[in-house]
Image 1 (cartoon, one colour):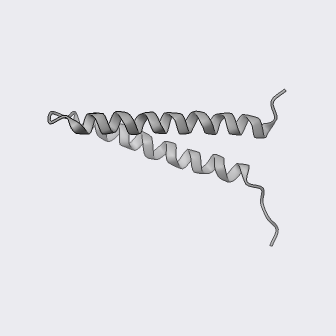
Image 2 (cartoon, rainbow, N blue to C red):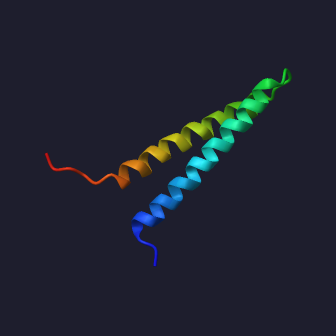
Length: 67
């Protein structure tokens, strides 16, 4: 049975992979002179959303410290 931590780590890996793939797609699309700006903008927005979600997952994996 997977623990909650294992599930979070697996999801985090998936999000990082998707973020990396989007980075590659955005870079390739940016190289072309004729761009679909709306499509490119949506990809960039999705990439930022993934970055935020990755940060949330990472913070859930770090145990709270009592000051």
